[in-house]
Image (cartoon, rainbow, N blue to C red; front, side, top):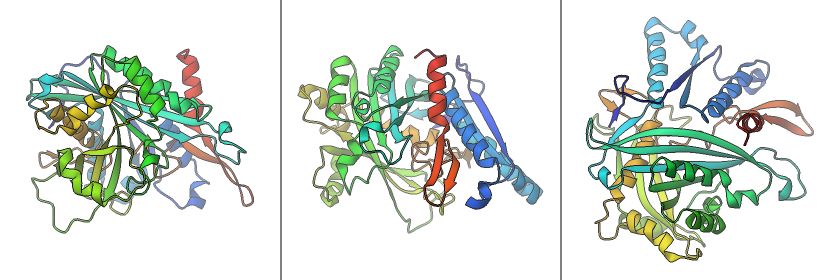
Length: 401
């Protein structure tokens, strides 16, 4: 794998956004008294909204750390911040069969509530719907494989649960990627608050309902669509990671048979484990455990009206006879997500992957989700303002959507 440098010719303009923050993490009572939480939430939201029109990446630098640390530690902090900017640029990943699928698209999307409260029924709830697209383009230099880069990030506010079944934004992104030349498109769904696969598998398919799949297959009959979900299982390493080791993989669906037998779920809805990416790296283990397994499941829904739609995806991702040239291409794109989103730079001539490349979907704090506390009472609890939902409305007006 190799990051594209500045010498490469590109028509895209990538924006780097540096956030200077005076203090770091504080106790909740101190955080409310400062403006850092509001600045951080606003910066997170601006990065996402500007991402609709241009590739953009934001990194933060805590000024207090520079004052209290030694010169050596200061240099380490600065270099770590700017190395993380590498994740803003395209990534080259080796795949000898890339000519079999010159362009592959991936749409990672999620929903989260944006007006939760004591509503008498679900029809009054609103949801923030988010998508992040990627395009993998076949290249011959510096080696045969793909150049994986981000496309745009989109957001929408849905006024009812019924709109989750149509998912207009995902269909727009499929149309956008098809116009870019993608004949194979992976749909990777993440629902906020979903339970683990091994607890209740059906909840993890809430963003891939049968009605949505039926509409997508009928609207785009010329595109190979791969509906997928993923789950992450932390693990403990029993030995030190070698310098030449970054991760390990399970590449064949048949090698996941033991996992399926160990899962206790009453309703599995044909969630077929097809690929596992396991990391051997730990950074800030007390906050984000990085050693574990990220398993990708193909959603094969037998309720759609034409079995050929689902069988095309099964043929390439399950690959029972190990003769599909598309199979290694699709896995190369999924593998690349763990490296392009790592934000760690190059260490000892090697890129280190991240276990879960979808931190924007499951943020650790409300500020990271673009929300801030505007009111708090002991009797009624707290009231949060969702910057992302507000700016989504503004963006739709400016873009005349």
